[in-house]
Structures are given as structure tokens and as C-alpha cells.
Image (cartoon, rainbow, N blue to C red; front, side, top):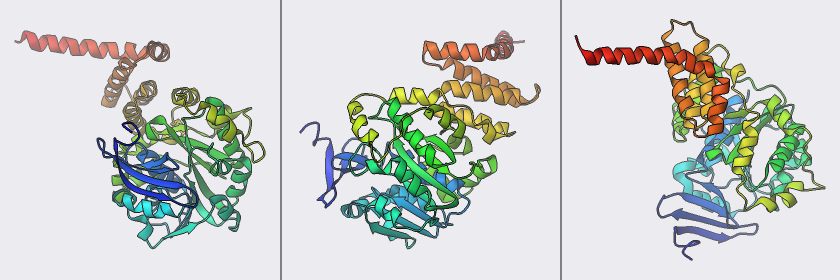
Length: 407
């Protein structure tokens, strides 16, 4: 009782036809969470970055944003993030469990009272069957937010057959956004999911999310044409800027720091991985063996091996590259921050004051490495950081000494 009940105040409980829906609030943190059959699927703290980014990212890159489909309602926060875009004309949310709609009313401060938005249409149905009955090319964006692909009833939303069918429900240029978690599965499961997803889409990207415990995986039939102007335009919308700021994303650099893998990196990582199919349901039967193991660090290490700086996105905007470096620092990705600061500094003339500032930032990020391995790697890759910074430090020391001596 002390573990399972005492820390929370029960706000809602219903035994629906598909799941048992619970909403509670933690006494200490005031976090409000929603659970299906005891598994937390939404919250107002740790899950917020994923709940917002799973909707904002596909809408940010989509060429057309008129008709949006969403699989899963949960707290309604992700659906509410869709309505941040005025261009959206219709949002169709497919939810299996009717009790979830009642529970979502307890999240009004975070979901923008989404079920009363006239653009939002809630359909109680199985997500896969509903999409199967839709005409091809109906949606501009589809957001699929059920996580935990080993759960019966959810696992068939992560198979090769489902992704292949679902892709055809997008219009040309449309974007699919998929929530994938990094816990409760090992690195082979992650490779399998990314390989299975990438088979269905010509172009795929992977973005990070909540506390590096989740991913947002994007797929479409054409390249992702991110550029500084497109990223900056998101923060020119006051309501969207506020929503992103609430999850510690205050500018394009902060957002770009969440981008982990481009299409080429995804395919290198997934090469040779077995696929998850309707026939083998590999993830449903394999992943539970890791359910109580701490696999998140290993899975992030796998992604880190393939992650590179978003130089193609940044282009010649070295200021954005430096802002991305600061975004990496906020995410405690010091080695990427060092690399980004150095590249930004070396891209400007030696007499540009930004060069000195960014080299110093790189140097301090380098000193912030918290493991011997990371520090050695940073030294090996950026030995010239110290060489470039040493004269600056010497000048600062001389100036300080001169000030102390006085006239």
C-alpha cells in the first residue's frame, strides 16, 4: 500500500470494455498521470516532451496540414498539440476505450480542452481496423501515439503489414509520426522496430524526446527538407512558442538538438535486423524478457553511435549550429556540443568575436565531460580545441594579473 497507493490521490477510475482507465495525481510532484490497465501512458511531467513533439514535428515538416489522423487519445495532450496549428482543418482521433474521453477531461490545462475544439472528431474504434477502412491518400499527417509495442492489442500497430497499409492512407508528401519508447526492450528490439518502420517509408528520421526514454520516428515518401527558415518559423507563432518553451525548447537550436538520426543513419543502424510481422509478432513475445531490465542506457548508446551533427540542416547558418550546441548542453550531450561549437567557430574568420566565444564554450563543454572515456574521445577528436583556447586563456590570465597589480 505504501508503494502502490499512498503516494497518489485517485482522480478517476473506470473499468471500460477494452481497458481499466485510471487517473491519479502524485502528492509530492503534483504530476497527473493516466494509466491503461495499470500502465502509465500519459503524464503532465516526464511525458510532456514526447506528447508535444509527436504532433509538432510532423506538422512542422508537412507541406499540407489540412487533415490529420491520430491513433490514440490518452490524455488528449498530443491531440491538443495538433490544434496549435491554425492550418489544421480536421483532426480525427481514433480511440479504442470510451472511458479515456472522460479521463481526458482531467487534463484540460494541458490538452487545450481538445475534445471541444470543433475541428476535432473522436471515433471509438480499433485504430488499425479504422485506418484499413479509410480510402488511400486521405490524411496529410498521421500521428500514432500508442507506445509499448509488446502489449497485446497494441503490438499489431508496430508490424510490417500495418506500416505498409497505413502508409498508403497518407497523401503524397504526407508524414507519419510514431511514438516509440526505449525502455523495456533491448537494442535488438529497437533495431527491429526501426528496420520494420523504415521498410514502409522512403525517408525516415528519428528524434529524441522525454528524458531520452522515448523516440519520435517520422516517415514520408520524400526527403525531410528541414532548413533554418522552416525551424525559425515555428517560433514566430506565439502559441506554439509558448507550448515548446514549456518543454524547455526555446528556439530552433534547442529543437534541432533533439534530432538524433537522419535517414542514412537509421538504415545503417537497422541493417540486417529481423522484421516484426503479423506472423511472428517478434516484439510482443521477445520484449517482455527485458521488461524489468534497465535497457534505456544501452539503447541510447546504440543511437549515439550513429548520431551526427545536423550539418545539412544548418547549412551556412553557423549561429544556428552554435545554438544547437547550446541545445546539446541542455540535454547533457557534451561531446556533440563540443563538436558543434568547434565547427561553428572554425566557420567564421579569426577576427570574428564569435570565434573566441564559441571556442571558449567548446572548451568548457569539453571540461564538462563526466566520464574518462568521453573526455579521452573529446581530446582525440578536438585536441586543437585546447590549442586554440590556450592563447585565449593566457591573454585572460595576463589581463587579470595586470588588473591586480594596478598602475
